[in-house]
Image (cartoon, rainbow, N blue to C red; front, side, top):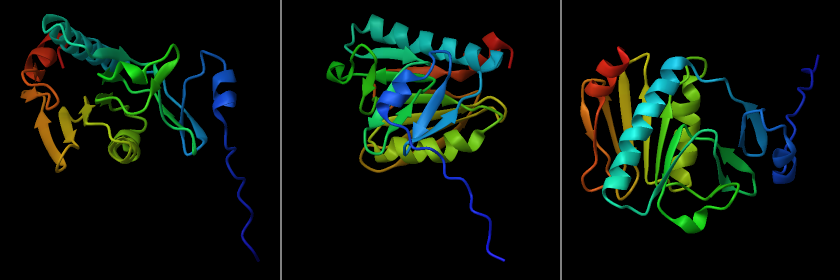
Length: 188
């Protein structure tokens, strides 16, 4: 007996994506839309602390980069359509920004792992971020209390740190993030 035909996922266009209700959070990989789970309290707390540290550094240095946190779209590709909403991103090329999104790879992305779908950050997004030339990608895993740093310029650097580490942001000359301070502040 032949196997049952599996329904094929619908491929969406940018126009269809933009017509989705604003409260519907999805990411699109190769034209297929995937629903996103709502972030947890610890996820939001970590995101706020990291965004604050990075933004304060940019302001103190009078830097030209901008920091954004989700939900803010990044369109990596039109064909096939790839749109992500990183938890935190830094964009240094203002020409990539328009009123709606970042068009092209941000310089620095941080994803905070969702317990419901960790492979999304560790596998799928790692693949797309590397191939679409994000310069640096961090995966912050509150459950495992680990940070994976992927620095894609020159040779791939992939280093795993614990939550008691101070970690250098490789795309910046003098930005270090002390996760021990963040963990103490958030009591995690």
